[in-house]
Length: 378
Image 1 (cartoon, rainbow, N blue to C red):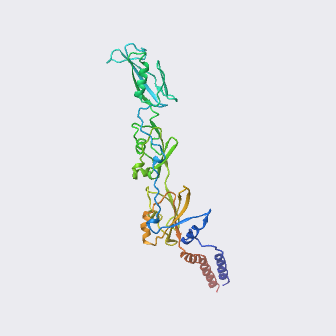
Image 2: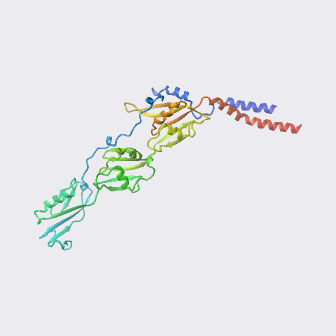
Image 3: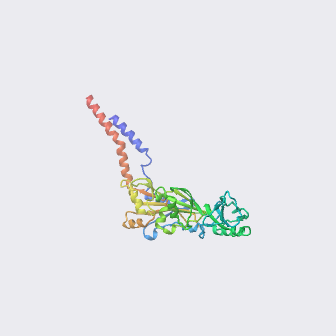
């Protein structure tokens, strides 16, 4: 008997030393109390979702034109610094560029000679140099305009010269595509009317999951971010790409966190462009029947006020009411939301019983062992 009393006393002393019971987080009532408490001089706003009027307005991505300057289409054969030109000059009669070692006679046109100049690069100032014609500014001109300029410069020196200019290597009418594409690098725009989806296809398509990909467009000092999945649902986001743009496809999944007394605690990713609160609750496995309170579903989010500053807001949804299930279907999740399942206050006594049971289960073993020893001694 002395042994049993000692064991009981030790376990009761340990139980008395427990300040709190195990818990996965605060209850709904505790959250509501703490939300109205001052934080940095301002209270956290608590919104009770009881009707459609209480639902937050979905925040749509701003139009890319808000950030990117709208540029008019440019000719596909416009020349600029870095371009390399192939220039051929045709002459009849006495040739200004007569050089038997490098001339090619055209059999179909007797007496006509052609001189192909070495590849000519447009320098950083937008100039090229032509023998006998000198240096001329060509940046911003088309190949046809450059032909006319060279021809006019040689008229005084040659008999009716004809000039043919073609682009050998194109820099001006190209873009740079990098990141999660099959063929990153420089891409020449053949029509100057290619859209964002066209360019991605021409670069070999994207790599990875489209729902996790975001493309950043850099145009001069401006930039815009567009998610690949959003283009499918909103064709207006499939913007026109312009020469000089730089595109970077990055793996940037949108996620929300699931905490508290849910079926599982995890960081979940958006499966589609738009995910409702009802879908997020289902993904979390719903409320844990042993720990959670269906009436205490909370969503934590930062929103921007009229001054553009981020303020914390807590949305509360009581899933014990039938209407809440319809409202949850209209509640749109956002990136980095925190979905919290509150603990049930009624579970605290049951936890105490479970804890006592766990603490006193060794007593049964000790008591049984003592009884066996005593019986054997007798």
